[in-house]
Image 1 (cartoon, rainbow, N blue to C red):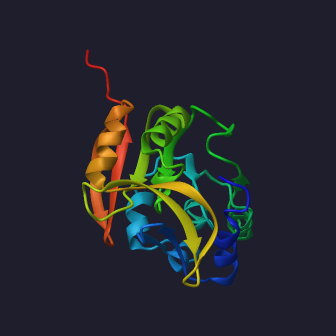
Image 2: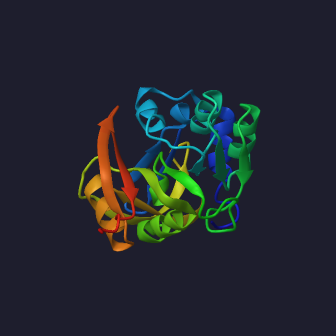
Image 3: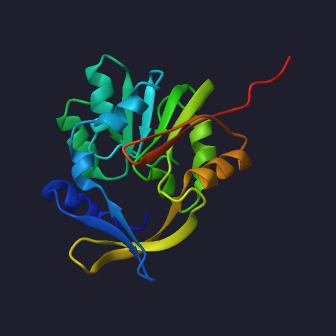
Length: 216
């Protein structure tokens, strides 16, 4: 991400402020900052129940999911490029590293569960590329638990966005993808992954993505 682009996000985490991603055409993606800072909720619990440890949470934010997993005795690690997010996760007593998912990540190819929640399928504006990278991190027989970032199943957009916290765009533009569950499944298929489970909870849509099992 472009240097300086994360400052509004890190400020919103520290101040518990409102924050959105806004495109030039006025399209707005509201970020659920208060939910990110809270404890895991009932919708999150449906994801936690499907996790096979150890778990890698990509774009862990302030760490509610990693904290919930660690509190239940499961091994988990969060990675995020926002220093404030990593610090907040560590303050919760959960492990996290300041790391870009496209850089070297501990345990590459050995994570039974890789998480892409809270709109993080949008990272980099390339859903297929991100899923391909997540699959590289995944252990044989593992799975990606991914959350669709749009309520419309067929939504599939790549936006050039900026953060907006006070009605004005702030910081440089960066690419961000917004996809519904059908489009997410299509992008997964393009990189050799298939949905093996899908569910909705709390107005959010989730998919379990895995490599096809070879037939005898």
